[in-house]
Structures are given as C-alpha cells and as structure tokens.
Length: 497
Image (cartoon, rainbow, N blue to C red; front, side, top):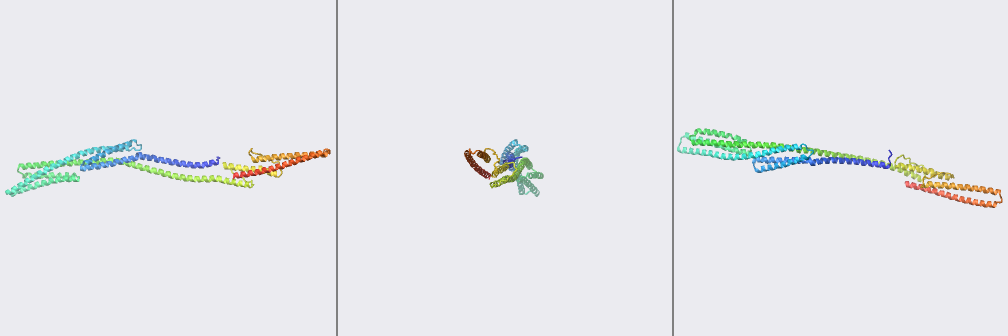
C-alpha cells in the first residue's frame, strides 16, 4: 500500500487517538457501570437497609416499653409502646412503597408481609396485656381487701381467746382447761402466722416478679384449714364455731384471690413471652432485610471498586502503550524525514561545488521520495543538458542540441536561444565566405572591374567584420546566458537548502 508522508503521520496520530478513544470508552463504560450500581444503592438498597433498621430499632423500643408496662403497669410505658407501633405502621408502608417501585428487591415484599403479620399479632397481644393487667390490678385490690378482713378476723379470734384465758386465770379455772385455752391460743397464732406468710409471699412475688411464690404460698391455706380442724374439737360454743366457719370461709376467699392473681400473672407472663416471640419474628424479618441490603451493598461496593481498579490499571497500561507507540512513531517519522533531508542537503552542497555526480536514489512512495526523484532528475538534466551543452560549446562544437520543458524553463530556453543564435551566426559566416569566394573569381576574370571588385571586396570585408563583431557579441551573450544558468543553479541549490 502506497502511503505518503501525511498518511504515515496521520496513521501514527490516528493510532494514538484510537488508543485514547478506547481508553476513554473503557473509562466511560466503567463509570456508567459504577453509576448504575450507585443509583441502585441510592434508590433501592440503602433505603431498604434504612427502613429495615428503623423498623428494627422501633420494634426494640416497643419491646422495651411493653416490658416496662408488663412489670409496672404504668400508663406512660403503654402510651410509648402504642406510639412506636404507629411508627412501625408508617415504616411498613414506606417499605411496601419501596418494594412496589424497586426492581431489584424481590424479597422485600415477603419480608414486609411477614413483619406486618407479626405486628398485627403483637397489637392483639398488647390489647390482651392491657386486659390482663387491668384484671391483675383488680385482683390485687380484692386480695388486699380480703387479706385485711381475714387478718382482722384472726386477730379478733386471738384476742377473744386471750381475754377468755385471762378470765379463766382470774376465776381460777382448772389447769386442764387453762392448758386447753393456751393450746387454742397457740393454734390461733399459728393461723395468723400462716396468713401473714401468705400476705408476705404475695408481696415478695410482686417485688421479685415471680408468681411461683404465690403458688407455693397456697399450701399455707391447707395448714390453716388443718389448724382450724384441730381447734374445732376444743370449741364448745356455737359462736366460736361460727367464727371458725368465718375464718375458713375467709381463708378460702383469700386463697381464691391469690389463685386468681397468680393465674392472671401467669397469663401476663405468657403474653410477655408471646410478645417476645412475635417481636422476634418482626426483628428477624427486619434484620434479614437489612442484612440482605448490606450484603448487596458490600457486593456492589466491591464490584464497583474492582471495576474502577480495572479501569485504572487498563488506562495506565494503555497510556504506557500509547507513550511507547507515540515515541516509536515520532522516532521513525522524524528519522524518515531528517535522514533523506540530510542527504538532500549534502547533494545540494556538492552541486553548489560543481559536483554533479551525487544522486539520492531513494525508493519511497511519499513526498520525500518524490522530492528525491525530482532532485535526481534535476541533477541529471543539469549534468547532461546544461553542462553537456556547455562542454560542447567549450570544445568548439556549435551543433549541440537542447530543449526547454516549458515557457518558464529559464535554463532550457536560454540554451535553446544560444543554440539558435550560434546556428544563425554560423550560417551568416558561411554566406560571407561564399561571397568572398565569388569576389575573388571576379578579380581574376576581369581586371576592368577591379576597382568595382575592390569596392565590393571592401564592402564584403566590412560585412564580414560586422558579422564577426555580431558573432563576438552573440558569443558574449552566450557566456552571459551560461553565467545566468550557473546563478539559477545556485539559486535552486539555495532554495533546496
């Protein structure tokens, strides 16, 4: 393929531009890749993580508030819990909206449904907790009233027994009867101690949040009934039997109140456990959504970092290749220009010294090759046409032939004119010689026309002299044309330099 110098330079720069374009295209492709994933992070995964974390935190606040309410039954804990449940509803709606518009969150809708189901169950458990807490408050109130009446009745029975014992002592009753009364007094104190132990167990259970203590204290009422059973055979008066009936009835009522409190308390604990289970499901779904978002976020971040790193390494490698290619192209392009120009300058220098044997002989298909061929042709023409003609002229050969390439060929036209002038002068000389020969014949043939012949000879000699003068002038002109040709050659050399 023939390529001129401009095409070679253009090809080199074109290769550099192509490499730059490829590097730029790769950078744009990688940047678009990173931008796409960045939009995915900004529009989908980060909002997913954010809403999931908010649901998780708000759920923990609800759990804390409801646990506080379960322990203290204080209204502000309940209010805080319900407020946070409303926030969870709002967050779930936000998550549902995100799931509807997101293209890359297929699991979010199922997670939202799972959390919503757990939240609905949790709301019902809150309502049940409020009901059980209210029932427990009534149980405690009823239990406290029953305990006061029960203990008051026991104290009255004990005081009655002590008063009767004092009366028997004053009366001087028998030792057996005093011992019987003392035994009944001891049994009454035992009932009071069991009653106080039951009341204390209720207080400890509430303080320690342990309803099992109430269940354990229920055995005290069996002891009370057993003691009442021991007292009855020792009792003779109907009024005392009725009082013992009242004590047994009140003990049974107190026992029922304690059992009701323990039952509701156990329900409250079961509700607490159910709430914990439901909240754990909501937390698990929210945590799963957050973890999914974080894992994908990390994957995207790693992928983006890898893409940018690859693009950076590729661009660095491409720049190195482009640099090497640019240096190589610049070196060989410069060398392909400077070396032939240096040979051309050396040739013109030699031509300036009159040495016309130097030739470039460059076989190239670009502008440098065209210039070299032109210079070689110029040197050939100068050596063969101009110098050859001048050498013939110097040897006296006036028959040299030359030609002009066009009307603007100053050297060729000057040589042509010189050739024509010399030929004309030679013709004139030959004509004059013939005339001299004819005049000499006339002198020898007729003496009568001597004077006329002499005159004619003089005229002929005058004409010969004029012709010789003209020939000398023409020769001078040829010399000037040769000088002009030499000057033109010098100017051509200077322009080439």
